[in-house]
Amino acid sequence: AFKQYASWILEENDDRNVRVNRIVMELAGGVHRSLANKALDRVAVGELNWEAVVLRHDSVNAYVLYTGKIVVFTRLLRRLHTDAEIAAVLGHEFGHVLAKHTSEMIANLIDTSDFRPSSPPHSYEGRR
Image 1 (tube, rainbow, N blue to C red):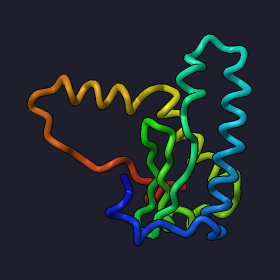
Image 2: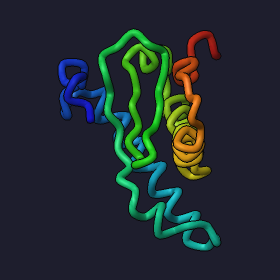
Image 3: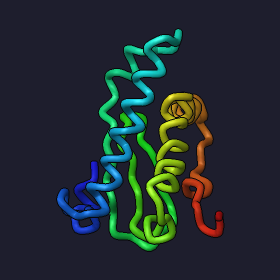
Image 4: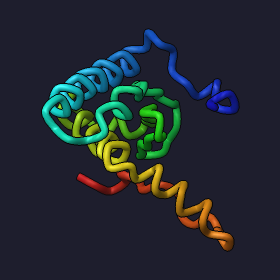
C-alpha cells in the first residue's frame, strides 16, 4: 500500500519511528485491557494490527487506516515535544478506528454514486 511512498518511510530503527511505535503499542495495550470488560466488538479490535509508519513529509498531519496502521508525518513530530503530546494525536487516530469512522466513510462512499473527493484529511497545522 505504501510502495509509491517507499522513499518517504523512515527506517525501522530510526529513533522517531521507534518512539512512535512504542507509544502505539502502549496505547494498543490499554485499548485491549479496557475492552476486556466492555460489550464492544472485541474480536474486530483484536484482529487489528496496530502499528505506525512515519513518513518524511512536511505535512503537519497523521491519519489512520481501518486496519489500525497509523501514518504520522515528520513535520508533525517536530511540533510534538513529549510522549504525551504524541499519545494524544495517536489516541485521536485510535478513536477513528474504534468508532469505525473509516469503515462508515467507505460504506458511505460506496453508497454514493456522485462521490467527488473533497478536502484532504484534517491537519494538525496551527493547533496547539
